[in-house]
Amino acid sequence: MLTGLLFILLVALGGAGLTIQMAWNNRLRIATGSAVLTTIISVLVTLTSLALVWASGTTDRGTIPAFNSIPKWAWFGGVFAGYYLVASLIGIPKLGAAAVFSLVIAGQMVAALILDSTGAFGVAKIPPSAFRVIGTLMLLIGVALIQKR
Image 1 (cartoon, rainbow, N blue to C red):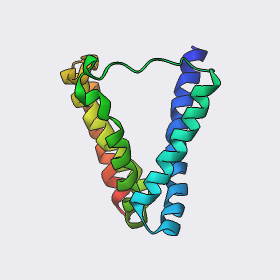
Image 2 (tube, rainbow, N blue to C red):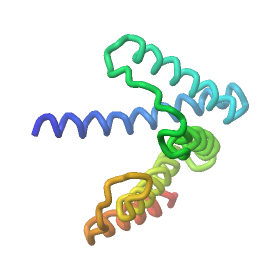
Image 3 (cartoon, rainbow, N blue to C red):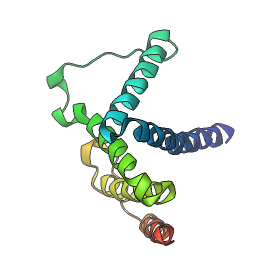
């Protein structure tokens, strides 16, 4: 139980970190005057941080698979990270952090529900239940309420 709770807390901390990252990146965007340049800097800092962790040997080192050994789409997940960062940096000054992140979470939940129900891209197929659909709808209602000022 504690292991499950610890995992939940670590994932939630990751979500909180994304919000802080956006606040810091937004400040950098003001200084650079460019959401794209700010994203490049952020991604370079991320890459450097991850390279240091990887080089330290504290995690599995892994191997790079042959390009043709996996579906081509599997190589391009980073495109969405760049899009997410740029879109968030453009949105935060206009909508605020709570509105942007509620929209991000709403988009994630709808996409996750679709991926789970279809099993697309190798995700475990989980049929949509009434609870999952109602939970997603409640989340979308929360997003709409957060947008109200």
